[in-house]
Image (cartoon, rainbow, N blue to C red; front, top):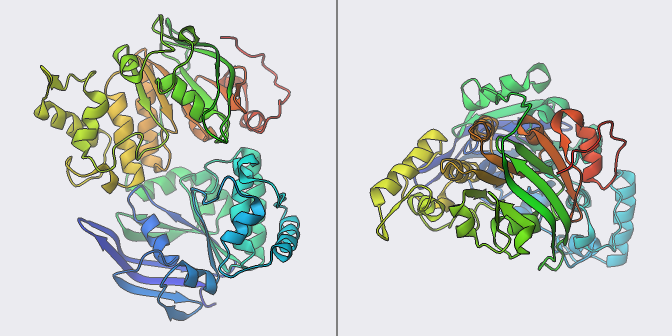
Length: 508
């Protein structure tokens, strides 16, 4: 059978980095093909060349047996290649129909387009109201819009980048049904994910990249997730080890009846949020993006003022304390957005280490920067957390997303905080790095720090947390011991449905 897509010896280099080194890839019609690799392995660069966003330095691209030069995304779409990006490209104030019309390559009649949209959404079980505004949709529904936009162009190859990172377990099941049906109809799917259980369940084959090079193509149904992870990183991955705790130390943070009005046009107001975390405890907050996580993080980090007694850290009322004063009493913070919030993109790793660590690591000497201590600190982070970079004077934006994430997480943990607040700590991070970050968080808690982890990845929360709760439309559920609630029950809570829980909630 002639492959739908074939890459031969594709090479792409950037200054100081060989992103793809003579990579081969072959995808057949009707095949769900995984693209696996650790952070910096070259997956994103390869996909961008397939979609016409970049051009290879050398090598060949064959589409249905014919060599092509993928000049731009419009050409890729004309051939039948569609792509659903990890971060959706939708206009919040526009309707579903308007967003889809904007994304079409040719002018369309809105009434005709709406009819086609209704028909194809019903046919594939991707029900959506064409006249609903994007800001009123859940993240799962927004993903449907992106998929429907591709389906309306009748793709022959659908590229999906981390498609389940923001979905509930129930939404993941529905997505898999759709993808399997598309494959049965002859559509090829190139599937990028760090969730190896999904790869084993969904994909027919998997190509592994390591260090920009093709390693092998294998049958994921015949491999364990651990074996695939080992092939990705070239060494055995040790899963995080966590001991069950029966008692915790003193209370580190208490949040009591926290209510905050969102300053975002489509944000969620916080409504009487209450919880506590004690020494040695890791509390996870699950939830689909856009349900108040941003507002909660801003309140906890000190980016917005709240009533002084609504947040108490180390016994000190802290609701009106700015971020630097909260750091002085032991808080460290990993924000969700790496570039611009967790780091200054154009500044060096040396400077980014200084920005949040100058107090805890004593990087100032009588008001002047101690450059040697700062360099030692930055190098220590890079060495311990295996951050791939070309020197600590490299700009933060020059790192891959996963490597920058490792640097930011390491920078905060190495300050030895009594309270760590981490949002999506392993977002976009490969299996090996995720395991290392998880172990670092567990180790920090074992040193009697309190940890709050906000994540949309239930596997992550169940791997490291002692207790879990869910945020939905600005309200926080009761808190449950991690051993007393299932993923399915958490998934229902994430969708706003209260399941029949067998274990009563723990009260703060």
